[in-house]
Length: 380
Image (cartoon, rainbow, N blue to C red; front, side, top):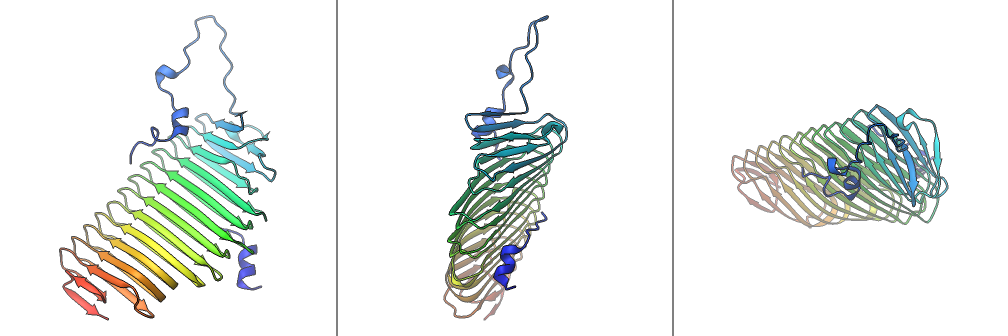
């Protein structure tokens, strides 16, 4: 079994600020002020029956739980619009058809929610996990088809929230947009895709905002597609955060990565690895550490161009850029205030033009290019 075959038959294993309610139309619809709540029934009048936990209205499947602990599974597909729901409020299996949107709102207790997605025609999914802790997984097993596309919005609360996207795709083109908004707890967002076979394109957008807790963000892709276009936006708040990105093009392909990452305050770590095996890479990445002692690393391997910016902010920071192959473009490191270490290493032709600025403090560095405010520098 060669590496490509192993990729396609392998099993995915993944371990996994501003008020958002006003900006999110789904949540606006779910949250009511006291004035909007139904008026109480007069004494002696029969009470209206409670709304069911699940109902379909014009293609929208609306699911709302009570405040008890939840363990819910939703199976989407294999037929278009087909959804099976198991376990909501401890209830039995329910089956729905003609679904184009899923809206799920949970209560104040622990929620464990799993979406099993087995169709290329995925309904839009909106999840509001309420005030308690939550663990939400989206597990994709996409069969052979021309185009598979999915759009998911997850809105967390002040609890500790985990969100995982795991996709194994056989469609020729895979388009995914995953948006996560978490609160001030300890949060984790993990995305992993494997795109196999004679594929044309892997297109994934991951957009995350977390609060002041200790947060983890991980995004990994392995694709056999001819092209992959990856867009990452992350804002990780004021806690001690960790971000890891690994993008691998298995065969000759064009890999485009556009990344904007704000690690926020405190001690943070970020590492990005982009590898293209025979193809071309185009990377535009801006990573900012903010206050605190930060570690920011970028490793690119292949042929192509890059626009890399590493901004350490205040604190004692470690900034590291390594290019392996034939990579042009520009690389900029700005450590700002603190006793920092800056590193820029190229294995191959020196086509990129680096700028290394240590800022205020006693700084050390290794590399070449335009160097300022670095007291001890080992020029390569």
